[in-house]
Image (cartoon, rainbow, N blue to C red; front, side, top):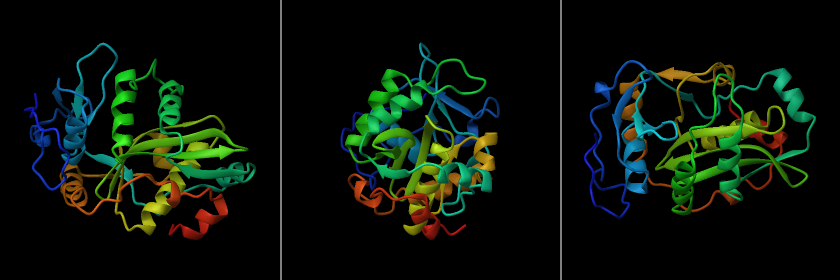
Length: 252
């Protein structure tokens, strides 16, 4: 179990308030289980992500902390939308915004049905924890709107110059893919090298996701999360652009 600290301040230049075990000790199955217990406070969560660790657990269980090998994610600007996906997106007058309704996005992610899963790991405690990080400037939501209504999106954490995607949802087909595409395009403009998606699944692989050895990922994370962070909401960086705007930005 990680060693806790009573540190209350959040300073990315300081040592981790919570030191996790070496991720190399994580079990190979299932998906790199490393530790249990602890809390979902900002100190715990920010320390975890900066060390290549994230929480995932079922309601009623102790908090479980994971560090899978390999890690899965995206090179920003290299997210792939197939011709069929592009056709579906073009049928809708969708626009992208950010950080205008973070809690609504995370709650939609919590209730989104997922193949092979019963229920959700996004509990009320998780919602409260990541919403707190949003208020501190670390949590961000990318949102897809149609005629003023939220129809898809994703949320995650930005620490330094590294984005850790957590979950996404679609109320209309391909809305979450559009959110991911727009986010990747913007991160490429900022020259961020990686967007973490934790573990591989077929949907993300079709969108251009790729694997990275855990050791390489941890080194990259340690370096990028110490870099100068973008502070505050991202609303001005996602000012209601459409697909054509992001296609002009994307390097794929």
